Image 1 (cartoon, rainbow, N blue to C red):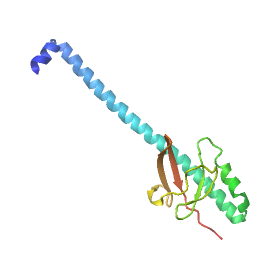
Image 2 (image 1 turned 90 degrees about the horizontal axis):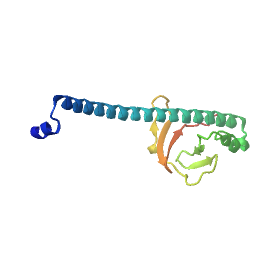
Image 3 (image 1 turned 180 degrees about the vertical axis):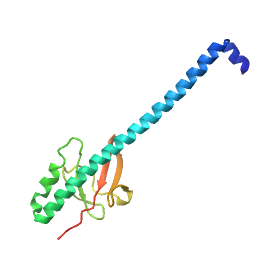
Image 4 (image 1 turned 180 degrees about the horizontal axis):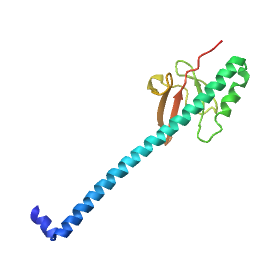
Amino acid sequence: MKRFLDNLFPSLAKKIAVAVATVFLLAGSTFVYFAQRTGYEMLEKQTQTKARGVAASVKGILEQIMMTGRNDILQGAIESATTSKDIVDVLILKTDGTVALKAKGTEGIENFSLSSFQDIPAVEGEKFLSAQEHNSLYEYILTPIVKKP
């Protein structure tokens, strides 16, 4: 092996140049890997934050509607929350995970396994689910809404 390397790189300068190039390639590859991973994590956190904001807004709207007893405006209220291009739909789930109401009436989503949601450490009671569907990443936020008198 030593003879092969001596024939391939006969001078010390070439050996040093190859060693330096190898170190730069390894370091560059490592940097790109960690930068990509960090960027993905930041994007995921930003998406979760945006989804939590929408969930909090919808929760506030629903609580206000429940207090006023104006259930006739419920559908229009949750539809107004989905005007952003980043928000696909707002779903109101029953305690068993079945969909009670959809803002846009998207097809295919009828039931969620509530056990697949993970706790959000920063917010007590809220849970999230990241799901890859139709070649896109979706963030579902589960925010409990308690009936109030």
